[in-house]
Image (tube, rainbow over all chains, first blue to last red; front, side, top):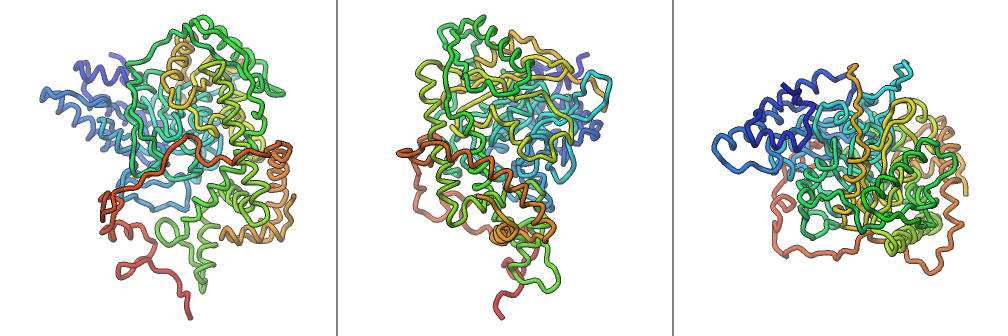
Length: 494
Length: 100
């Protein structure tokens, strides 16, 4: 009998529907996988009963001859940035310790409504600020991958959705939610050999998603392959009146629309993404990707995105500025932690609470954000960054005159070791060099595995599409996936 | 532009984050590194460019002008609102005394 934890969303959905196995068997297999992989520290909270209840509902519905829901019997992992009713939600920060949401985020509610169950809440970088999962207040997530050099150096699973990427690649869940502000779905997906898509800004409701940078934050699925991402994204997307920036547009049937032929499509290769000191292996991966899209029938054209080099610095003004405003709500009054030193007044309580509750990187970004928004500096920093953001979006609009899809590497390297970059914030920020521009422009973008580096670690290719053209992104990603034939997986050591 | 220790303390006070002198001192080079790097944005000619306010064109909606148009975000949720308060009394959030 196949190991049920080797199955993805589609296989589980179809197998439950056809009665090959019961949803309860699936949930039990994944619950066991979760509880036996605590060394990875991927889960902050385990919710086996939630997964079992959803599974039993699916089995009961099937026994009664009812039409099964789209994700009936599929247990998933939930990034701890999503508020889940009655289940602790901390954004991996001490400041939210003890917080139990009284409501369910729209995206997680949609997944439960589609029949999915929850295996647990996934570890992440604190408030989604980080690229290695090292800023979590509850410990690093250890990537299930190891270099093939015989050393057992613990590697970063990427971030900020590092619990999600580790859990999916280690077969602790068939899929997980992620969120992406500057690359937090795509870079961890690339580091762990899985797929992940950040949809167009506004596709997935932000209601109930703990806010980092509201003009950039987008939820999306992380799963084993492109089809599973399409299935899960369909369930997560849709208009929500409770999010002022939610898009009131129909959700296409992305799974049904999958088509790996790129005949008649033009794929753009942005020349500015050839950054200095890019490892040869990344360059070679990109070349392979170019051959694959050609093989799928696409015409490859070179395009220019002239303001690419300014995307990261603009992002590191805009995102901290928005974060400093969003995180002002953690005041020790309404929820979470309160630190009240003896004799402290209200202001001292705020300052003590925030000093004790926020991690170093979160404080750093709040301070940067506060500085760039302060009187006298606002125009020089924040307004200028917002203007550069307009130019970056215009670069993409211009590129769309000569192509429908862009192809780039996802990250400038394979996974690095834990601790290798954590002392140098700037070096860490540079990890997002290829993912941030599309975030700033609100465009859909996806990472799919493209191969292994010389140490046997996964590398990802990124596909960027026009606003609302998730179908085009998924199709190009599928064409890459079919040709990459990526089957590598981490050998269980945990 | 670069920050000195006095500026770091001022910003931390604006952000309501308590920091001691040693921490402030450590932050000076860290923040200056980041600020020095983002200053390359000054090279970009943005004359005549409007700052971005919305990545995807969208119009702001008005909800129906009725009480509890959405029961979940409407009124009458006092207990749920207070459920996570570090300290709540008599149906209110409580804080240290602010008026002598």
